[in-house]
Image (cartoon, one colour):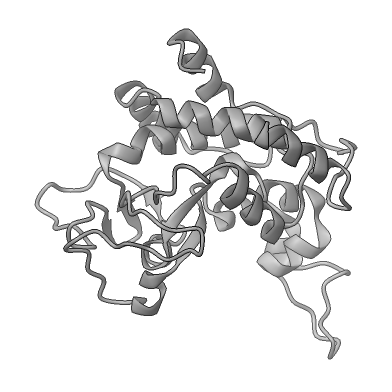
Amino acid sequence: MRTLITFALISSTLFFQAPSLAENINGNQRFESFNQVKKILEKDVVFDHRFTLYCQAPFMANKQILLPEGFQTISHKKRASRIEWEHVVPAENFGRSFTEWREGSSDCFDNKGSPFKGRKCAEKANRTFRLMQCDMYNLYPSIGAVNAERGNKNFEVLSEALPNSFGSCSMKISGNKAEPPKSSRGTIARSYKYMAYAYPKFNLSKQQARLMDAWDKQYPVQRWECIRAKRIEAIQGNENPFVKNPCQENKLW
């Protein structure tokens, strides 16, 4: 009932957009405000399961984090005390497919008349980018310091000899690659596969596609992943078949 009520309220806001895209997408066609989507996720999706994706750190409604014992970070220490919503498929990775990100736009001039490009321009001038940026299936709570260090690095299986980058949290970062804990790999894989399915603008490299297929098989859906997907479908209005289908097959839906 909680989710249905929220959806009814959201539908009547200014952020509701009828599906009227030039591109044929299977993803989010309702929400364009990143700030609003984060609030919805906190209040109506993870309200009874407040744990970060990589480190499984619990956090409160006020975003206070209980860091795992032995968690360490060398840099971004201030961000270690706060929750951030991470794009598992980084915004930059799909954002660079937009001209507005790479080159700018006639709509992208600041108050001094100077042109700008990058994420701010794509966000201002391209609706498809806004929809992709706000897709709830691709957004997960993360310790801020972990989110900062991961950045737009691609995932990969790294050497077993490498130490964890955050102490007791088994997330490894080396150079421009990141290896997530085993507990999050299936979720990550199904998020990547969903984004490639839902948005023609985003293409997985052959290497990343092989890795995500492997993780999808190695780490099957868990009950919480099914609950999360069901709530997002009710709010956002579209499905992630890479989660929904196995959830239904295993009677976890």
